[in-house]
Amino acid sequence: MPVTPRIVVLAGGVGGSRFVLGVREALRRRGIADTAEALTVVVNTGDDLWLSGVRLQPDVDSIMYALAGVNDTERGWGRQGDTERVNAELQEWDAGWPWFTLGDLDLGTHLARTGWLRDGLTPTEVLERMSRRWPLGARLLPMTDAEVDTIVVLEDGSRLHFQEWWTRHRATLTPSRFDNPGIDSASPAPGVADAIAAADVVLVAPSNPVVSIGPILAVAGIRNVLRATAAPIVGVSPIIGGRVVRGMADVCLAAIGVETTADAVAAHYGARAHGGLLDAWLIAEEDAALAAGVDGFGIRSIVTPLWMTDVDRSAALAESALAAAGV
Image (tube, rainbow, N blue to C red; front, side, top):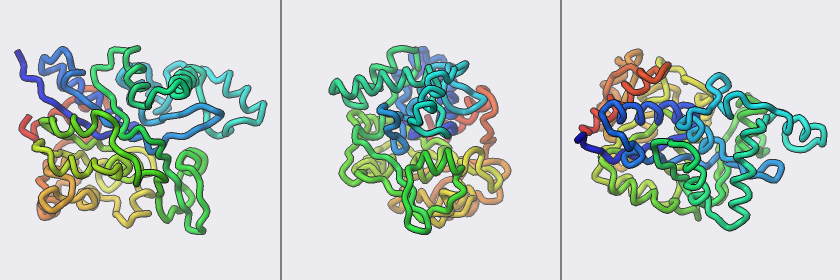
């Protein structure tokens, strides 16, 4: 019987979705049939929002749809083969955001979630119920049950929701900072701290360090349990060859004074030995020259292919991350 490791992944967005798929596939290739027993994903909920009376959880849904095999891989969000009749009707009523498309199947998810929340279920309980629909092969946990949205504060002091800045303006408005109202009083969702404490390895997905991984780490208590866990913490760089793989993470990094390089992001996370997060950091072959600098931070660098262009490469990357942890 293959040994079943206990893996926790911190993730959000498309990069997180692809990486989680790779971890699940790597476990399957090891002969582990019940990957849900091995794999727990702590998902960013910092970009959640209320829109047209329903609660949206973009990162949660992206990862859930990807694991279910129903995600739209071309657009990078939403459901495969979705239609937009209800969205068009909302626009006729001048409701919602005309630049934020909600597919009909996707709206079904949001309506179900909202109904359960209004019935008194917590976000953790709602996600557990939603996860029963498909054989996801992973346990999904929100980072917190508190409502913690992301607000972008622009240089002129004006404020807008992250989704408006990201989707409508495509990150072209220069941010001065990102706020998460309520995060100071938020606590980890049930099961998050226990999963990290009991893990054999914690993996930091190649998600946006500022608005995907950042909110997870900002939830009170999560950094402490990460520092205390006996599990190695291995991160995967979201930067390849000095460029972001997808999205506008470079704009987010610039807003907090971090260069768009693999070593700068490693320094931003910091070495666990010096009060930071990471024990090891996977960087791309294109960034091999930066390995010595990463090592100098007290973080062990591993040079390996990072492109997740198909399931085989995603699984190979996940296997490299597990190997870096000795799992």
